[in-house]
Structure formats: structure tokens, C-alpha cells
Image: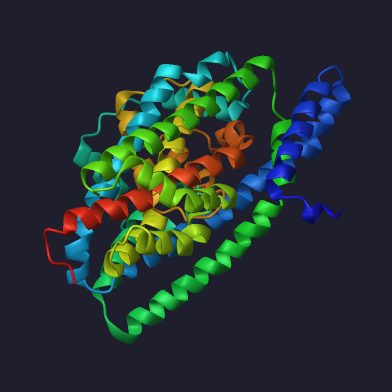
Length: 416
Ligand code: ASP
């Protein structure tokens, strides 16, 4: 059987296992360690660079398509207020749950020192010295962009790209006619173009994962930490799925606990196996309409915008991941930085496409924003494919739950 026939998740798990073995086996052989540093480590760097390469165009096009697809301003007003209320409530809950669990469980504390290069340790030292004295509006003034091309050309300005896309998306939703269709068509084309690029990058991910893992200075503590990290993410996701959503859809959506899970089981399994909210979208829409009887105008809007914007699982995962990376690098995060993590996580998640690995790519945004080295992503790459399956399931469950809630809330108001 050709290597292409082996599912990517299996390939990545194999690459991780080989990488881990390599990292341990090379220890007694200095020549082998030198070979890893000179020849294998750069492959990992290339993989990280490729992830960077697709991040800006993908975030930009996905977000504008999600926002701009609204049919009219009045539609935005009628359904939008409830939708964004529900999206925001669950997103904030997800990030707060994620950060709180990471704080309580402290998955990164088991790593005493992680070998980092000189440039990285300098960055960390600078980060530890920098006192955040900004007020909220002061911080906001810093992140609002004033030049589209400048923001698009700088990987460290991803947050600005998300903000620009938000502004352009809202403006597009206010437009009508030919120009709007043309812009949307063009951006949708860009989105699928870069989705293909993602497929190419993901196809290379076993090599990238191997190279990154093989050049890690692994020890038993690191592995224990990774286990704790995964446990923290999965526990947070389970709280969202089995506690937070049921609280929402039983309160606002007039739907019973078991009813929800029995009707949405197939969709959730599809989300789990594809790791893609976008791939699951047609099925999600169908179930929300046919099984839960949510009217078309509400289900179309909530589910399609939700697939891009409402990714609670991804937001929760990113908070845990950033906390874990900071801890592993010996950086104590301040309360202000945690606030920034929550804000950036919500904004960058809104800009992530519903495709496999998108959460991990946009994680770079948060690392950059709080001043952590993007290379820190190496630490959480290994279990990412697996965690992607769990967080995508939560993302999709969040869209179904939001549709039910918006429907319940809008019933008192005439929605046409
Ligand atoms: N795969 C996720 C989704 O499609 C996004 C992510 O990578 O977190 O919902």
C-alpha cells in the first residue's frame, strides 16, 4: 500500500513516534545530535514557515466571506444580535474555562528547563521585564491598524489582519448587487485556493512533525507534561460539550439534553472524523433544519457564519496551549497578558478557517501578540491532530447549540 493511502493522522502519529525515538536514541551519539541540528532541524523550520505563509491569506478571505455573506443589514440586525450574544457568551466561557483549567492543572510546570536557543532566551528575558502599563483603550489603539498593505505584509501583525477583515466583512454585508457578488466570489476562490495550499502543507506535516520532534531535547518530564496538557484540553472540551452547551440549549433553545445528543450524533461523529467544521457544514445545516426544525433564515446564517467564527473548542484549546507553552518556557503570565490571550484567542479564532489544523496555525497569532516565540508551537505539535478531532466536534456542537438558542430567542420576535 502506498504511503498516500495511509490516513494522514496515522502518518503523523507514526512520524511523532519515530521523532520521539530519534530524539531519545541520538542522546549518546554527539555526531548524530550534530546531524539532527544541521540537517533535520531546518526541515522543521521550513514547515513552520509554510504554516506562516498561508496564515494571512486564509484568515483574511475566510473571515470576510463569513461576515460578508449576510444578505442585508436588516437581516444582520434581526438575527445578528442573538447570534453574536450566544457566540460571544460561549466563546468567553470557553476561553475562561481553558485558562482556568490550565492555571489549576499547570501542565507545563513539570518541565523544569526546556533547551531554547540564545535568541529565544533573550526574547523571554525581554518579555519578563516588560511591564504592561497600557489602559484598555490604550491597548486597543495599538492594535487597530492604519495600513492594510502594511498589516498584510507582516506576520507579526495577524491581529490587525483579523480586525481589517472584520471591518471589510461588515462593510461588504451592507452592500448589494453585482459588486458584492463579485467580491464574495473572488474571496471564496482565494479561500479554496489557499485551502489547497493547506492540504499540501498538511501532506508535508509528517516530515515537519518528525523534524520538529526529533530535534527536541526530550525527557520523561516533557512527555508527562504533554499528557497533562492533552488531559487539560480534553477536560475543558468535555465541560463545554456536556455542561455549557446543555445549559444554553435547555435554557434558550427549548431542547432536551438527550434529544440534542441523539439528533446531532451523526454530525458530531462526522466532525470528529474529518477534523473540519467546513466539511461538516452541509450535514450540520441539514440536521439543524430537518431534525431540529430551525427555520432556513436562522439556520443558514448561524451555521455558516458559525463554522468560521464560532469555534469554542479551538478557542479553549488555544488558551490552554499558550499557557502551556509559556509555562514550559518558564514565563509567568500576568493577569493583563491572560486578558490579552482571551481577547486574541477569540479574535484569531474568528479568523480561523474550519479546516484541519487551522487552530494550530492561528495559535501563532497569540504567541506573537503576547511576545512568546512562535517556535513554542513545536511543543504542542505532536498531539495536535488528535486534539483537532476533539475540538472540531465541540466547534460543530457549538454551532448547532447556537442555532437552537437563536431560534428560541427569536421566536418572540418576527423574523422573516
Ligand atoms: N479543525 C478545526 C475546525 O475545522 C479548526 C481547528 O483547527 O481548530 O473546526
